[in-house]
Length: 310
Image (cartoon, rainbow, N blue to C red; front, side):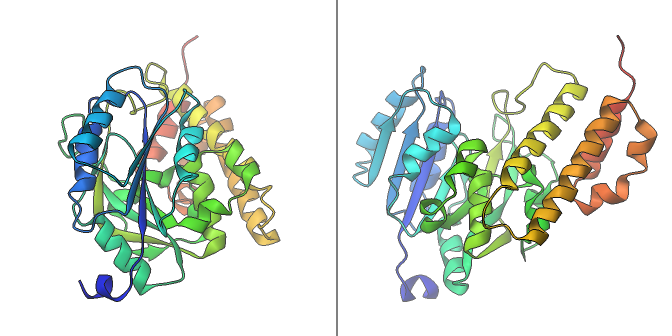
């Protein structure tokens, strides 16, 4: 394509793995089937105990991937695992990649053209399909699957769970110049999104460039818990992330006030669920829409607030 011929931009793909033997080869094959291949692939394993390491070793050997670096780490957690790989990147544009998803064949090409067309971009987040364990498409509607192309402002970015690292590509200096305090206290993808905001524009591209797989291992961090526990735990997590974010030295007064108001809103939701105040939550639909939450999330809050036995 014309834009690709005009300017050479190098790319790095960072893959985090942990006990991913079931899906990892499908993900890696989707990377190798790109219309524009990455300059380097860095895979960081977090101490897998299944056949993940064996499968990746064979994949690298069989495909003669001289541009692939495979890091075999002790189990340290997802953020530290991604950090091990991100520390090694040399490409201008970095793509984050989970072990169980599937990339569309033109993902890298499309993203590179967007970066070339708008040099002020620091990060691009693209639309996704949701699929089940067997790879069949799910009818799930979220900000990541339904939104049109647009620039993401600070208020929208605060809806912490709307965007996923696996759908993002960012300029290398977003990570290299990150705030270590925020990085160490929050998730790796949230930290990168905040840093990207200070480095330039964040653009949501309304083109589906990958499929996000939902299965028993990633569908919920609390799979056997009640809806009440799941909702309260999710809200607590968001509050914790935002309380750490508000300390970022690059935030101005207005941005800190936006975060404070959002934390107040989250605390209100948590309190209403805790106290089973269904009516108060039901009357809060305008504020819920303001912060970008779906009707499904609104209903989930109400159901979680229903009086609990015992």
